[in-house]
Image 1 (spheres, rainbow, N blue to C red):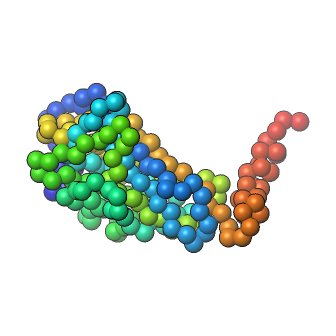
Image 2 (cartoon, helix red, strand yellow):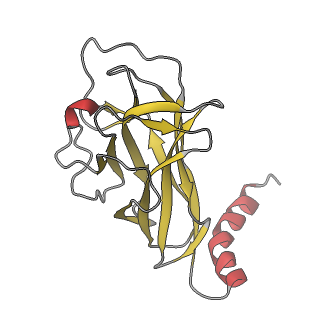
Length: 203
């Protein structure tokens, strides 16, 4: 199944971008020790549904603030396969789930049953992270490429084999607070950033 995700020599050149990939946080803030969900959505870039057969997504996060726990398929579209392939060809998933700050996610539709990416977005899965340390913002991003040898983030067309229909790659970000009263917790997170801004102001 992984052969779908490996770049093929002589593959059809990419078409105009029609399907975006987007991380959407299920909540904008969380406390240290809480679980954070970020949904991965396939989104049509116009007002019609666009079909895809597979998604290969390279992503990264900051392991000092977030620990990847796994995936949650609740509410997601029905897929043949959805997960982090072990022994992937780009050496991104050192373990499953990956822990070193980058990884490869692969989603496959059932054979002959392409999935529609809607204008509002089709949920592929939800990435589950454990909040480790307070921060004003920690991103979870989708990368156009990564790994060694380099691989690419690709959305494959639903009907034409190996046709790349990848559009924009949009990451998400969350705030992590220390447990305690809301305003105090937010102040602890924001204070270093405010002090840094003050020091950088010209005299």
